[in-house]
Every structure is written in structure tokens, then in C-alpha cells.
Image (tube, one colour):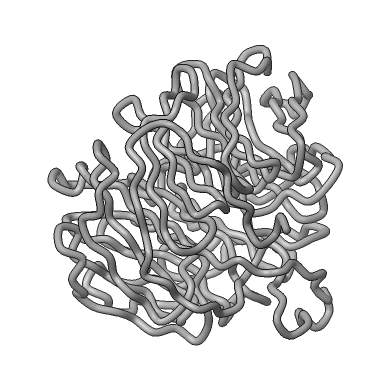
Length: 393
């Protein structure tokens, strides 16, 4: 199911059933919500009612979040293609990469930037033609960060962008453990910074000449624009979550079940909040409320000042993720969207065949099927006795 909640109260407004698991984050544009599913379809829903407007079928699972620019929707699929659709669901063109496209994309300089599991990072123009590609040592599924000097052009939260905006540099992470800085026009390497493990799923952020990102080595990193380290902060487990910058604070989740708030300048801990399960989803702050999902099946609404809980909404499956991205949708601005991701067992992927054992999922990639459950509940304040989840037994 895909859910729409009231931002202030956490009450359910509507829900929509797709044919399989949803892992991609939605966007809402012009009173419509766009969301991809593992059932191979891209859906357009009415933002007020949740009614289906149209759906578009691809040849593979969709885990990529849509990028929107001037009436055109861009997204990737497990069939190896990058798609460009009109806002009413008509195909404009598609570009074939060498392997699955699991991550999301950014745009500037008349180009769409994205990575693939063929280990390449791509720049494709607005007509679907390859401009350049850059080889890394691992899969690439992080969302690119585009920047001019000390300011960002496109970041994790900016999925609605201008294809013709200008950007000098593109930043992204790879499964090879490196964080890359490339010339956004030519694709040439500026520098790369090595972390201790995979950089996957999450995205980076830029503010006042500092770049923030996380790695599976359990650390949150802050770098200067030349790739030198400013500080790093250690959490208790690997990090899938992306940083959210708000009033001098970095909010980020960790697989150690905590949401962390760090000082942007020093990297020191401001506060942390413990959820009942791993925090893979990325925080969102809207109207002075921090929203974050957890493997304990709850969407939490917290105070961004001290991390105190305001309310929580429980659904029937782990890892609700959250988004609040809107354009020209005043009524939808009252809503927050969450969706299910499956509880599955991780497995190492064979990088030559791209196969995993039956009943497992591609590490940091797709999920296997699961039994859907309609149950959900809302707790308005306070805490509950922690119930052990299946992975804690």
C-alpha cells in the first residue's frame, strides 16, 4: 500500500494498493502523485483522493524515484532503461544502460545524471543521447548532487529540477567505497575520497561549502569542496539514510535504530532518538516537524529541536518511508506520504551474473514478495513498550 497522512495529526487520508512492494520515494506535482513499484509500473494518482489517473508499464522493477523537470518525468528501471514520460504518461524516449538502474537521478546542463549497476555513472541529454559515462569500481545507486562552487543545484530533496540549470560539479558515492567529484560538463575526475565501506542508496547534501554524506562503515562524513575531511561521526551500524540539513543541524538515520541530530559545523551530537527498529528511510523536516520511518513499522513525528516524540503511525510492514515534495499542490501540502518496504534477508550478490539465492534480496536493491497486511494504528504521544521484531528474536 501507498499511504497519505495528515501532516499535523498523522491520521490516514487515503491509501492505494499497487501490485507489489514500493521502495521508490514519490513526488507530487500539479495535484498528482507519481510513484514507482516493484510490479514494474509507474503510477499517477490524484493527490487529494488517491484515485488512479494512469499507469505505465516498464520491463522491470522500479526502485528509482522520479525526477521531474518542466512537464517531463525521468526514472530508471530494472530493465536497464532510463525513461522519459510526459506528465500524462506518454513515452518520449528511453535510454539503455549496461545494467539495472536502481538509484535516482539529478539534472542540469541539459543532462540527466544517474548511476547503474554496470559500475558506470552516466550523463544523458534531454533527447536521450549519451553525453559521457564514468567508470567506478562498484555499483552506483546513490542520487547525484550537482553544485556550483559552494551552493547546490540539485540535491536529495530537490527531485523537481530545471534541466537547463547550470552546474560545475557532480558528486556521488559508489559501492567501491569512494565518494566522487566529477566535472559535470566533461565527466572528468576532480577528486575521490575513500571511506571504509560501500556508499549506497543514500544521497549527499551541500551547504556553505561543506558536503555531507554517509557510508556503510557506520560514519557520517563532512568534507570540504576540495575533498579534504572536516569531521566524521560514528554511529552504531551501517547507514542507508540520507542527511537532511535544517537550521545548522544534520538529521540522519542509522541501522542501529537511532535518528541522529548532529551539529553541521562540529559534527557533535545534539540529540538522538531510538526507534524500535533500523532506520533506513531518510528524515524530512516540514513545518517544524521531523518525520522518519523505521523497521518497527512506525512513521515517527519528532521535534527537530530535541527529538521528543509528537506522534507515531503504525502500518503492517517494516520500513515506512516518507516524502513531502510538492509543486503547485496547495491542498496536498497538508499531506505526508509513506509506503511499505519488505522485511527480507540480505544476501551477497554475484557481480558477474547479478543473481542471488531464492528467498533473498539483492543487497541494497530489490525486495522479495511478502504477504500484505491492512492493519495500521496511530499513537498521538508518548511511548509504548517495545515489541520484539522478527529480526530481533
